[in-house]
Amino acid sequence: MALILGIESSCDETAVAVIDTSGTTLDARVVAQRIASQDAAHRPYGGVVPEIAARAHVEVLAPMVAATLADAGIALGAIDAIAATAGPGLIGGVMVGLVTGKALAMAADKPLIAVNHLEGHALSPRLADPALAYPYLLLLVSGGHCQIVEVRGLGQYRRLATTIDDALGEAFDKTAKILGLGYPGGPAVERLAREGDPRAVPLPRPLLGSAEPHFSFAGLKSAVLRAHESGRYDPADIAASFQQAAIDCLVDRLRRALAACAPVTALVVAGGVAANWALRSALETLADGAGLPLVAPPPRLCTDNAAMIGWAGAERYAAGLFDPLDFVARPRWPLDADAAPVRGAGVKA
Ligand code: KG4
Ligand code: ZN
Image (tube, rainbow, N blue to C red; front, top):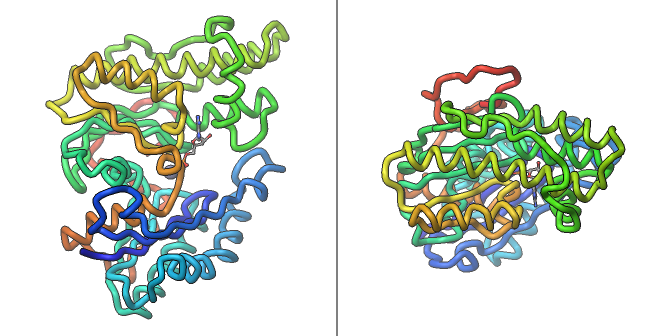
């Protein structure tokens, strides 16, 4: 049994959690968690401003560590290891969390675990569902990434597909901006989509049916802009049609990946966009058809949080994988370092 302190600060959420590895349910495993959202600070700019984010992390992180330990009813000395996000992400924020993790590890004389934020998302379903065994097929959909990954074991990731241009969360956020829904965009688009007709606006489904495995969302985003500017469509219909087009692309690419990958125990979805209920229900149908269970963590574990970082730390702790105190923060840090680069501009790792 181990107690792991998790720290997350790679984007616009500051989060701290205490994970108890002896727990057999999500609630028993996440002893305490605090999340401070910076939404209000970034809203006037319609997106995350890196400088503002880094400063906001500095202001709240240290008191949040103290408060989260107090919530858990333990002292720092009772923690077995400190797990902090060390990348990828906005480098200023990542450095704030990593330096804080290093300082705590040094002060408490406990090991540091430098966690890849994407590994946090990738393993979050195992935190939520203790029965989920390796290997599984993962759809990782967040603000910066859109990938299909075969998760074979801890640290063993084979990327089957990635986006050749925009991430899906980015496309949701841009759609929200075009429709004047504000920031953050994903949840707002989902809400408005419920009132619209998903067949009302003809939108492209980039790479649908393509023999190559990857995703593309830039053309869909431009089509949303053109549809809106034409003045012919109701914003709710645009939101619903965009969401449906995106889901159609995900399902098509996943169907292809399921046919191509080695046998897996489950279809799994993680990352911020996995909080989307329309997506989850489409994936449920896809998994059903493939004879696999769908594992989707509760929405609060899909968007950025520290419980998933603490959990990735817990899996690394069990495997004896620790990092030196001079570990350098990584703005880019692919899950699968061996994956071949894909064609297209602005490719995310
Ligand atoms: O994983 P995450 O919290 O941060 C990153 O690591 O990027 O993902 C944030 C992204 C944002 O683009 C946000 O708009 C999107 O996830 N998102 C959603 C929903 N909730 C968050 N997209 C669609 N539907 C949602 N309900
Ligand atoms: Zn994330």
